[in-house]
Image (cartoon, rainbow, N blue to C red; front, side, top):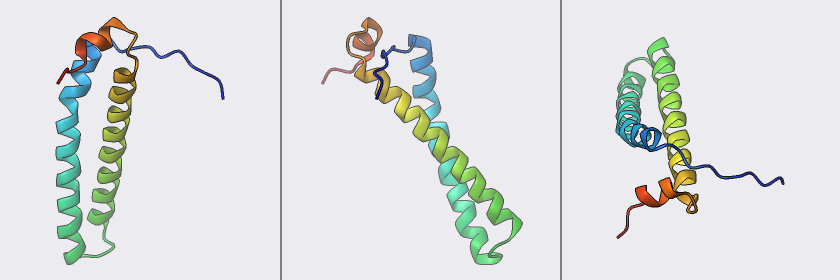
Length: 88
């Protein structure tokens, strides 16, 4: 497996990724709620399928964002990552 150079994200990109996470979580929750409520009324209907697609899309976007932020935090040698890493 080829090794790749880890490059930290720009500070603006990190802030945008951190801001968008709650939006993706909200979309996932709303889609799940619609999926559950519509499945009771009309199982296998069009609205159930659309809610399922939205749930899948928001889940994929949230996972991609989480992976990007995780990889950014692992790039410890970059000064941007050091500045943005929370110290506890």
